[in-house]
Amino acid sequence: MNDSNQLLSKITSFVSLKSLSPEELIRLAGEIRSFIIDNVSKTGGHLASSLGVVEITLALHHVLDLPKDKIIWDVGHQCYAHKILTGRKERFHTLRQYDGISGFPSRKESEYDCYGTGHASTSISAALGMAKARDIKKENFRIVAVIGDGSFTGGNALEAVNQAGYLGTPIIIVLNDNRMSISKNVGAFSEYTHRIERTEVYKNIKHSMNRLIENAGTIREELISLKQYIKEVGAPGLLFEKLGINYIGPVDGHNIGELLDAFQRAAEIHGPVLIHCKTVKGKGYHPAEENKSRFHGVSPFDAANGNDLKKNTGRTFTDVFAETMVKVAEKDPSVIAITAAMPDGTGLSRFKDAFPDRFFDVGIAEQHAVVFAAGMASQGFKPVCAIYSTFLQRAYDAIIHDVCLQGLPVLFAIDRAGIVGNDGPTHHGSFDISFLRHIPNLTIMAPRSENELEKMILFYLSLGKPAAIRFPRGNCMSIGDDPVEEIEIGRCEILRSGDDLTVISCGSVFSEVSLVVDSLNMKGIGVTFLNVRFIKPLDRSICSHIRKTGRVLIVEENSVQGGVGSAVLEMCAAENIKASFKLIGLPDIFIEHGDQSFLRKKYGLSHDAIFEESLRLLQACK
Image (cartoon, rainbow, N blue to C red; front, side, top):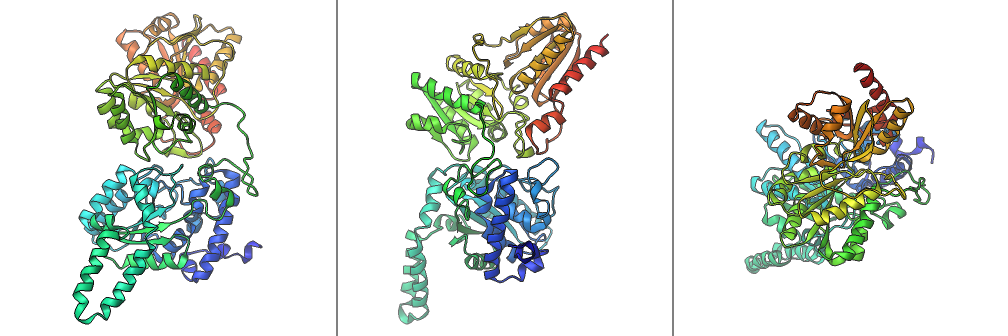
């Protein structure tokens, strides 16, 4: 179809959108889906979730007066239609590309993005805070939180619902119920919302009862009591009503007419309202509907059939972790695997298939995952809690209070440590070394290769203490037949010895640093090259190498503040060692979205940048 004939090309403002009929909105929904599929097939992104909320987005934009009224998108990965309708259609081809538009809502990007998101379960809290601020300032506008049923299982969301019902503050909560987060949802609350969809019979009875009451005459009071009894025993949304949240639904989340009616009804209620919308994740694109988990977040693909355009031929650290977990569990029945709604992303779906009774997906509830693991560890099990670096931040208190304070042997398998790429600042694993390193009783490791990761997992099984292993997104370096020496707690690996410069590194950047060391040796520069392995406890013999060379280059993929370099500097200060140091890592900013290799180059973690810094350090010390 020629673009000039499409409705989407004619939507230039909210005035033009509001003038559309429900039939035209249905047509526009199809055009938006086609536009999203075409663009995301080239850029990659969160496809299935955005396809599932197109009608909800259109209905909200039709009813609300944006940007005066506010929409908060929980997580925000489903906001693509919203971005297209709020002046970003012409830049949508830059989605998640460096210097392009973000894949999540961003206050810096648009006045229509009233609140920045990227992690789950925050929208209702933020909406409630904004609503109370509105009321205190005696302003008048509507606030809508759009949250998925997966995010609704998170403690933050349930805490917010608890207060919203207590305060009675007018907000609208749109529950996008598709039975999915990244993988299939789990938990009693997910089952509760699923049961509600089967209560259409209640809606019919309610309407019939209302008609009877209107014409009841002398038995009117008895019918009112009967209606209340039916509501008590079988009403959908009863839990929300009991908490003080007005409930509307279930609503067909792909029916524009039903949605418009529900949103208009909600706007007339003075108090918190929950609109329960049943949707299909990946709606309108058959490959995404059939494989919701895979199309949650995708790399570029062929839009015609959904096939990947790029095949990953190497083994990732996640692959090695998953395979090793299955191997160790076969030999040790005390090994338990725990994840927070990420069985596919962490690779633990393989463990689930092999040992279903020893696998636990707790939903989007990282703090609970950690405390749950602590409880199992207290009873003699060896739980491995696999959580992305950026999401482990949400469980910080539990790591300290429930695991490390009690010295319980929980292993934190920290995936996606370092730069993750196009998901941007809400997802980069920039801080885990810094926020874990100062916690007593915690052993922290970073493998440089697949062999080393496997050995570190085996080491944890015999450690009997809390431990963490951080590893990056992407392929790992295989060292083939070259055996990794056995892991000894707090002992670094000495790979080269030289008198001119000490180079210290570990983990994700190690292979790049190794090439830099080769380049320095080719120039006749004697390098002592150390693989830290243990970020904590740090090998104190490192001090003797630093004394010998007097010049130290430390490279890591973590914030420089509080990272490995900081640990080495603290140790040298305690030993009164005088030397010249250069720390290379991530700067004191939130790293933007962009390709992993591009961002590493920009922030000085490429071969050429590290090599040049090495030469500058040597030159400055002459």
